[in-house]
Length: 63
Image (cartoon, rainbow, N blue to C red; front, side):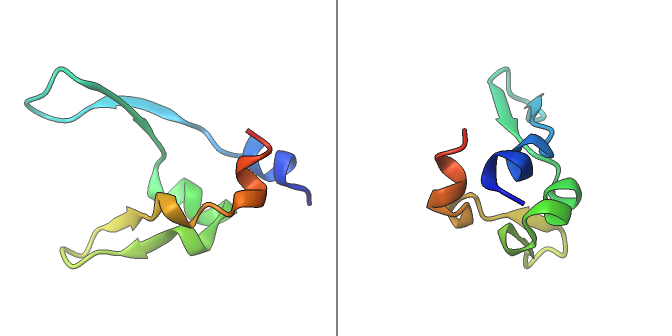
């Protein structure tokens, strides 16, 4: 599967953190884990977190 096909599987989300009016964009860790498992890991608090810096450069070119 090429990078563009993998990126098309992602579903970006628009959200605001509690107590903030700033709009943010990101992904749901569980959904991202299905496409790019290396980008998701368990944090110290037990929740899943996203390592955005892990997105391979070859994938970024497909954006």
